[in-house]
Image (cartoon, rainbow, N blue to C red; front, top):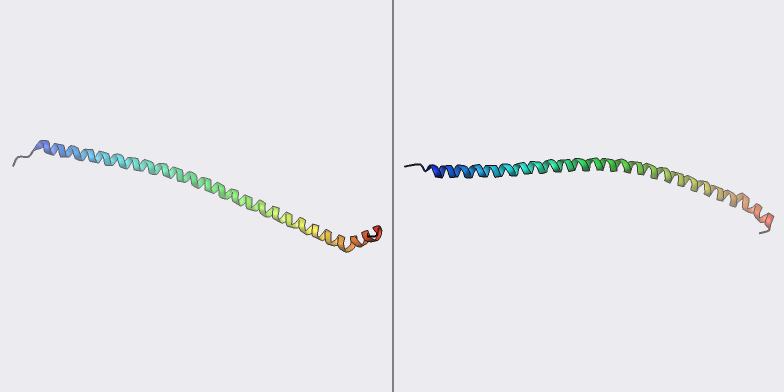
Length: 96
């Protein structure tokens, strides 16, 4: 049985073309994976920066809160002292 060389050559060319297409698709996939990895690394950096900012904000919030509570306590103590000791004096002086 004779071998049709043109048929075999055509099949080999088809296979080569298919392998080249698959290779191109694999290369494209690998490039997209590299791009996505770079984007993920950039997001990780931004998240780390945001986490550091949040820690700073929490510390500032805690400091401000503590100062406000301290000022409130001082004002409450001053108002209580005035009502206990100062108000009777003001009533006597001004006849209230």
